[in-house]
Image 1: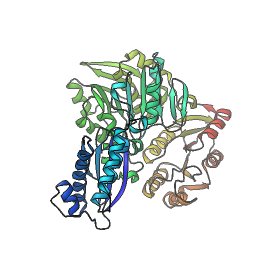
Image 2 (image 1 turned 90 degrees about the horizontal axis):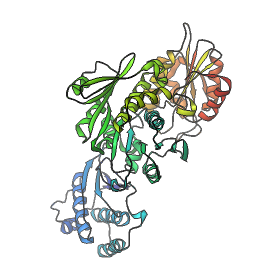
Image 3 (image 1 turned 90 degrees about the vertical axis):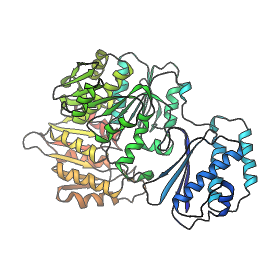
Length: 534
């Protein structure tokens, strides 16, 4: 056996809804978990398989906590998706001492030569010192939270839903602090730029005085690497689940990806609401593992699960081809017409209808009136000033240009189906495709297949900023083999692919751009040389 990592999780996580330290072990060289472990922790086995070593590790952790005078708390053993990997996660409250116990436990079980008494003395010394801010979980504790919190997660649509939710709340007169993959905002001021979807961003919002609501986008990576940034929320939102970042941080299946993201809904207060996409079977199933009341939303006006939920008195938002309605307390109430929700383009942007439903449900769940939600939906637009890089649409000399942060297969499919709706008779759909290098080969191939199937012509772009371990030209090589004869040009970067695309389109055509790294330059050009349609 070998230790893969000792990871500190500062908040609710895949293993437990408390701060935890994870020891990941993997089958490797034969373990020397010998009679020493048995005598120390009363383990009656000499088996060196991963399950037995995990059990031995658990017992040694319990014994070490007792010897150090610490309460052990919850300990969880979980078999991971990577073959031969098991995690042992244990609750913690003092970072230094708890990590030292984990390191010592692994050394002990693996048979390393250590001075156990000296190590325990050092741990006791750490415990006797006053705990400073760095020694306690970074998770914002429920006992200190003074404002309502909305947590938003899912594979696609998180940032748009976060921005729209915040905009609706602000238009209703609320002071809002919100986090997203683009930064931390206090009302309309960006106070921290970059991806702040983890614990540090949440704490920055909760530390801001005078706010009325916190809206917190939460990504899978933050949950897996750091844990959730807060202990509880009042409303949670799960937009959808689809393949993205598969194989990273030990997540290989959609079922486990759902479990990771469901942490956001599992920490929702019992008297709160979990807003769930009823059109996504995995998201819908999360209602079985939450304490909160499910608030379902659907783009299918005849969704049987929603109908049954409403019959039982549950809340739901549904959209048909023309309108959004809210079912609650035995009544159906019109929220708004889709023609009055600019980000949906009258309903033709189906994924934006989904985002609008999610944001509207979150705002109703937090206590806004239908009138306030209606006003907020009508006022928000897909323009760079409000929803940068998310379905920003322009007219350029009669051709339509759509710039979007599509970065996976599902996002690209939404983008291309939407882009096709702007092509006039005989018009072509041209797309510039590429993604970040941390996607596995199958994900990159999937992007190529979607482009070849749904577009008329494909421009392949390499990455300058997000190669993430890949060689220059490696991703275009993968894409070319899949795109085939749809390929018309290969470019070294995103901005050159955009300009090449402009040369390829004329009146009646559509250019769609997967825009993940050069949005500032591309959008600045379009704002100067084209007319906004969003």
